[in-house]
Image 1 (cartoon, rainbow, N blue to C red):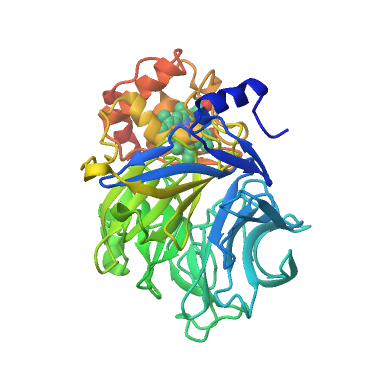
Image 2 (cartoon, rainbow, N blue to C red; image 1 turned 30 degrees about the vertical axis):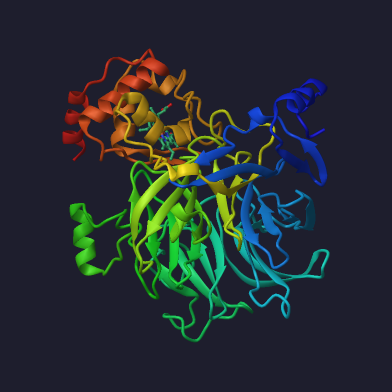
Length: 507
Ligand code: HEC
C-alpha cells in the first residue's frame, strides 16, 4: 500500500486535522498534517495555502497546464500523466519504453498551442543505442482523448548521463525552443554545428526554420551549461535558468544569436580572464547570478492573484530546495528583487507550473539520483499547490523575509559549497561522489584536501569536483576545519597559511 496511514493516524487526523485531503490515483484518503510542514503562509496582504494534490510519484520533471484544465506531467521513468488538480485523480496516458534512465530519462514536455486542431505533445528523453551511445530525442505524440499514440521522431541530438539540460517551450510564432546542456563538452558549445549548450529553435515538424541565425543549424543562442528552466513572459521575453559549476548559477534573457559565455565566462565578466574574453566576444550578462549555487530548475512567469508576486519569474531550485520569486521591472527585462520561499520544506523542486487562475504548482524530485538529507519522505514525489486563500485582515505588512546571509562558519560553507555532492553526513553518493568519512586517501596528510579544494579533480566515475580557489584562504581553512572535525579527525590541522603556500606553488 502506498499510504503510510494506519488506523491510529487516521483517528489522529480526524481528531486534529483541519481538513486537508489528498488522493492516490483517484482514491481519496485523508492525510496526516505533520507530513505537511506548512499549510498557510502570510505575505504582506495575501494569505496563501499549501496543499499536496498528488503524491507517490517518481521524480517528476515537467508540469504543463493543459487545455483540459489538468496538469500534464512527466516523470523520469518514461511516464506521461494527467492530473485533475481538483480531485487528485491521475490518468497515465503514456509509458515510453525506449528511455534510458541512469540519471535522467524522460525530461521535458510541451503541448501544441493550437490544441483543438493539433492535439500534439512534444517530449524530450534520453535513449541509449545498441552501440551504447546516448542520444536525446524530441518526439511528437498525438492525444486521442485517452492516451498518447503515434510517436514521430522530430529531432535527435547527442546526449549524456547528465548535463542534458532540457526544457521545451513553444513561441507565439509557433517554434519549439529547446534548452540543451553542455554534455560536459566545452569545445563545441560555441559552434553552431553542434547542439550542446544552446537554445535550439525548430519548426513544429522538426525542420529548421529559415530565419534561424546560423543557416541549416537549429542553434538560436549559445553558451549555456545546464539549463533546466525556460519560459516566456507575458510580453514575450524568453528567460533561461541554468546551473553554474562551482559558482554562478544564472538567469538570462535569451536573444537571437546571443552568446552567454560558458565555459569562458561564469556569471558576470568580472575576472581578468573573463574580461579579456568579453572584449573579444560580445557576451550577454545574466539578469541574476547566484554564488553559492542553488541549482535552478524549472521556471515559469507569474502574473496571477498573489499580488506580492505579480510580474515575477518563479524559479524552483534543487540544491537549495526553495522557490525563488524573481521580481521583474516594468519592461520585463530585468530582475529587480528576490524572495526565497519554502526553504528545505519540500525537498528538491524540479518544476513549477502556473494555472490560468494564478495557482502555482510545485513538483518535488526527491526520488531522483541525488536525494537530499531527510528526503525522500513517504509521500514523495509530490505535486503541491500554492494558492491565494484570502487577504490578511488589516493587511499587516509582515514581509516574508528572504533568508538573510547566515554567519559564515565552516558548517555554512560546507552546506553552501559541498553538501550537494558529499551530502550533509559527508558520506557522498556511492559510485559518484566519494565519502569524506573514513577516506583512506585523506588519512593523516594535508595535501590531498588542500589540492582538491584549490584545483578540484575528476574521479574515475567521470564525476568532477570543481575548484574552490575563489574562496579566501580564511574560508578554505574554515572548511578544512569543518571537514576534519565532522568527518575526518585523522587529518592534521590545516590553516590559511597552508592554502596560501599551496596557491603559490600551484600558480
Ligand atoms: C559537484 C560535486 C562536488 C562538490 C560540490 C564538491 N566535491 Fe569534493 N569531490 C567530488 C568528486 C567527484 C571527488 C572525487 C575526485 C577525485 O577522485 O579526484 C571529490 C573529492 C573530494 C575530496 C577527496 C576525497 C578522497 O577520498 O580523496 C575531498 C576532501 C573533497 N572532495 C572535499 C570537498 C569539499 C570540502 C567541498 C566543498 C568546498 C567539495 N568537496 C565539493 C565532487 C564534489
